[in-house]
Image (cartoon, rainbow, N blue to C red):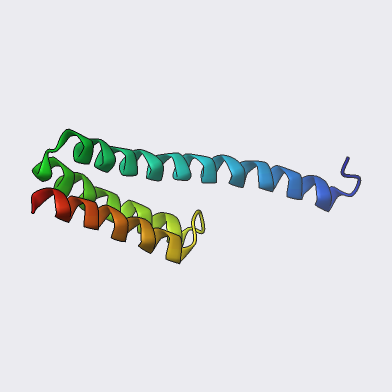
Length: 88
């Protein structure tokens, strides 16, 4: 258990940041899931719209440090390829 006041404060700060990061990660995953569901349904227009909404959310997660920048770029790239293949 933390003994110093600073260690207690860091525990409180970490708990707050964990909650915020958890909600941001969940939000990003929900946007990705919407794109994947649209792809699975075969609706190219809905998939394009969902991807258009998901891209800034994924990059925002990267900027906030939730995921690495390269991970975010990879996710966007792979989703884009799947959406493009759907409409082709």
